[in-house]
Image 1 (tube, protein in one colour):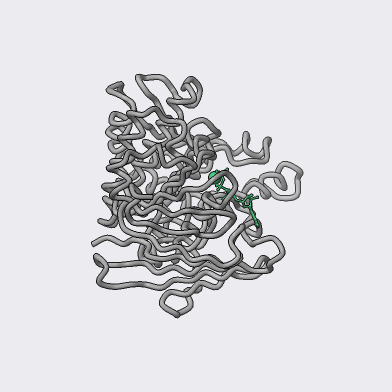
Image 2: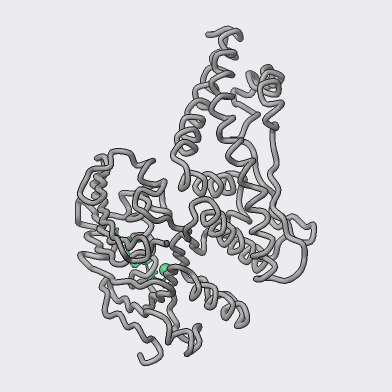
Length: 374
Ligand SMILES: Nc1ncnc2c1ncn2[C@@H]1O[C@H](COP(=O)(O)OP(=O)(O)OP(=O)(O)O)[C@@H](O)[C@H]1O
Ligand SMILES: [Mg+2]
């Protein structure tokens, strides 16, 4: 059965001093004017469930100005509400995060991020359009975050791989500058290939599955044109060691590692057209949404449970037909939290089956289970 978030307490998190929000399964709409704390609330849910902010690598930003720590506490319903897990994250900048699961310390952030809370999240922030529109690193980050949320071994390999590449790059520069000999490179090649292989294998297995889900999501969101995502390699698994070796002299000259999953990408296309280069704003946005839906389906396929959907301000730029489609999709989800400034984006019969959470000035004003009355 499927997990959902029942309650979240935010202490000194962004513009929340101390607030608690109660949530239900299915669709939860977070409504409020601009700059009241809607996006912050979604960020806090993700922080509570994964242990990190999905919005910024500079996490001291989440601590309320004038405070010296932030804390989230969450109650997660498990097994169709029969059980409950309590998870808390305490964070003071410069210190290791304190994570507890049912009161017991969880020392590994990587383990926690890979589902120790009992739930997973798939987030959509308006800025995520960069997954389609932006640099290869944005797309790699999307894949790595998804796979890391499912397998701590992948997360660890990806982290260690990045470090190994850095170290190999340092060595390349030392060789170039005459401080080391090229023979020392073989050891680092082996280490890099060892770790890189895990990353590559994980991505290779995932992309065709994601592609299937992406196709059907984009068909529902956009239309019948043929959509695809396709992994693009600097080297395939089979040729990896050899390709790395062949690149030695070029790599030494440049002082960087030119082959491996840290340089790979995936192509997002619609009707044979590469959306990164040629997509319209709307196509890029819908493709981003379809990727997020594909991530939802992928998580469902791997763990047999839906992730919690956290979608920020997703309705505002869509036409009415697509808003209706999305509202239905969220309503049928195990749990979805959607922010909006305007409840009119949701029809009355949708609102009747929705929990409405009103936010103002970093406070949760009220929650109503029948939004159609409010
Ligand atoms: N660390 C922090 N401490 C206190 N306030 C913060 C912190 N970080 C951000 N804020 C403030 O929180 C307020 C609410 O931000 P948030 O992004 O959640 O607004 P929002 O309700 O999503 O608005 P919009 O509809 O414009 O997207 C902003 O005014 C922002 O400046
Ligand atoms: Mg916002």
